[in-house]
Amino acid sequence: MTKESNDFTIAKPWRYKRYYLYAFATIFTLVLPWITVNGNHFFLLSFDKLQLHLAFIQFDMQELYLLPFLLMLLFLGIFGITALGGRVFCGWLCPQTIFRVFYRDLIETTILGLRKRIKNKQQEPDMSLRKNKIKKVLAVLIAIPLALLAASDFLWYFVPPEDFFSYFNDISNHLTLFGIVIGVALFLLYDIIILKENFCVYVCPYSRVQSILYDEHTIMALYNPHRGGEIYNDKHEKQFTKQKDLKAVEPNAECTTCEACVTVCPTHIDIRKGLQLECINCLECVDACTTVMGKLGKPSLVTWSSDYEIIDQKGKTKYFRPKIIVYAVLLVGITIILGMMGSKKEHMLLNINKENRLYSTKLMPDGKVKVSNSYIFLLQNTQKEKMKFYFDVIAPEGMKGKIVISKPTKPFEAKPGVRKKKIVTLSTTDVLVKNPIKDSVIPITIHAYALDKDGKKSEKISVFRKSSFIYPKESILKNSK
Image 1 (spheres, helix red, strand yellow):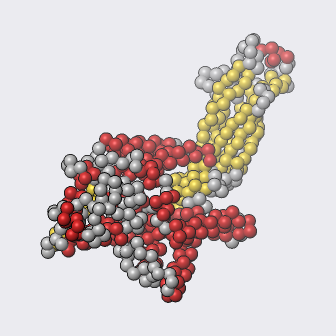
Image 2 (tube, helix red, strand yellow):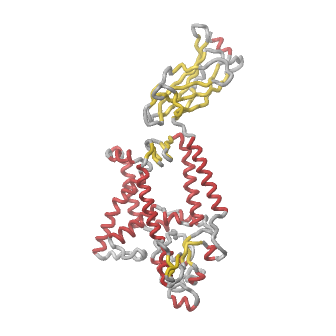
Image 3 (cartoon, helix red, strand yellow):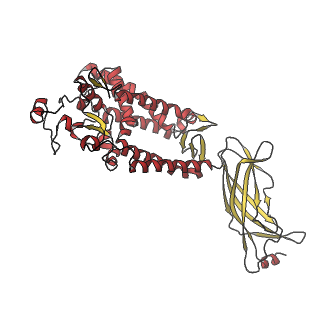
């Protein structure tokens, strides 16, 4: 706070700071889906193409093991923010709150004048008046395209804009997508026009979870009863509605009982009653009390602080306490793990399954026995263009003899995003193992790689997979001759 001309004021009300953050968050979420690097998005969870784009890197279905780490980051981040600043996410970043403020404060109040004052959120417009009915219809008509835009923006994180609009040009084949957009838009309209802040109070489960995350140092909007006086008793029953009655009991009480902090509250609570689950930490009550008390040359009775500092008066709020440090360490640790795992991304997908038949044998013209093992290779080209692929066989170190690829005999093409099934046969005419009792399992490594434009092995697009080559016992080899 700053003191100017004996008035206690704040440089800029919290409400305006929230508006700036709302504008930034809105623009950011609308623009982000359109930004791509090499055709990859910052975040995209595509159920259509079974892909995850993260930090402009594309991951395919087999790499969705990263998704749980993203969810852990999300929940730990929200839990940590709640332990530190209460329901600050609800009041400052929640999409429902942002959309509701746009509708109530911008459309209904500022643009149409349906509501008389932004500072009075308790009094609903008189809908018996014809002019108010017209304004209400206009407000809804303005909200409809905004709801459709918000619904579309939501889906752009699951269906990228480049696909979204092409699908909408062929609605008959994409009715599900069209239905989801309409459904989300209708829910948003119902939420902001009919349900309103009751969503925060009764529907959102976060308010129930937050209570177990709070401690005495959690900062939130708090009324100071030591300065303002006890407006409510221990049973949360209101004792005073007039300042003179409060003064008669507590002569030093500073609360004017103007109830500016009550009328401005979007969730319709009285902050003077104490901690309530409905409080979303929007700090509207702090602004209201700051304005009223500032005119009296006094600091606000409602501040953004903690029970430890305001209610219990034990000292200053401790922001860096063990709980917060643990959350911070976990978030940093998971971020590092996610980064390390993401940096090991493979630029092609390959599964190798051995056929049910262990091996086959064939007597060659030179009298040697050819032993063959067959495999099913499932390969997916994750690049943006058609490419050629081939394989190498890496035998264990020190093994006598050589295993070669007898099928396919030359590189083959794979289209981007299409899983290709290929039968691969490995063979040898060398005597790899002499075992009279049982077949031998020889560990091998398959090196699969793409070929660049010059027909050379690509160092980037290559993977290694462990497998095995079954070599028959001596009796099988003798019977084949």
